[in-house]
Length: 341
Image 1 (tube, rainbow, N blue to C red):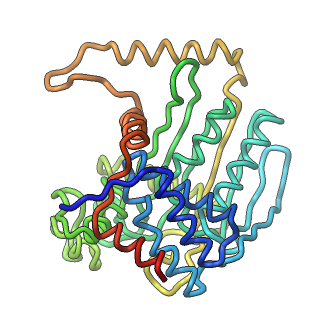
Image 2: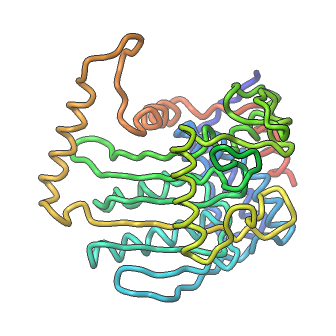
């Protein structure tokens, strides 16, 4: 497979120019470009710049508002409901997390529920903002139907990711971001775009059979919940927090990124100060101590190192920041065509 390596700065600028050319304001284009490139830096290529063309298509079709707008209601000192007004999900979620953190810093806890939004990319980005402000955060979002409940064949829930973050003292914060499915559906779409097969165990065909063909998986098929009934249980709760509680659509009523339809996705952020109960320095010291103790545990056969939650992404972030981001020829050519047009 042919790969092209491009620096973080060059890729951010390329994506920023694409969104600016489409009519977005400079600050909004910059937020989008940094978010998408961050996903690539962390190795989450399914949520990175491979999404640019899809976002542009939705802006051009009118299924997503080109001019960013959001409004707040039902506000209390510790919570508020945000109407995303069908704006770009990354922009809405970015503002939502800022509001949640502001409330947490002032009142100890901040909760933000969001409706009428769109695909918000990688939750880890929003979590990082909270940890940078010495807060602990949990973020969830629902997603278009692609996963059956445990024991079912028909899709109902989305991949419904959940993420959390915890600040530390001397090291990077713990930032963990996972889909409640075995794999994010975007990874199957990326495999399709790059003409690659997918591992058995990722998805079912529409007939309920295991498949390694991304085209079959995406043609009426379904991804599977991680850990069987446990992943299903998590996906259910994410749907409650992000879809039901916010008044957004849920399950099969959500629009997908790839159809001529409004999405009405919901997000939920819970943020609280890390020093709510003990001194911040003590908290961070205890986090560092526990992290070190976990990494020093005796290694099982076949393991050379114990990684903390999200640490592999941090390692890859450092490597790609220094040596560049690898893109397939297909993804790079797609960006080039958008730059020209």
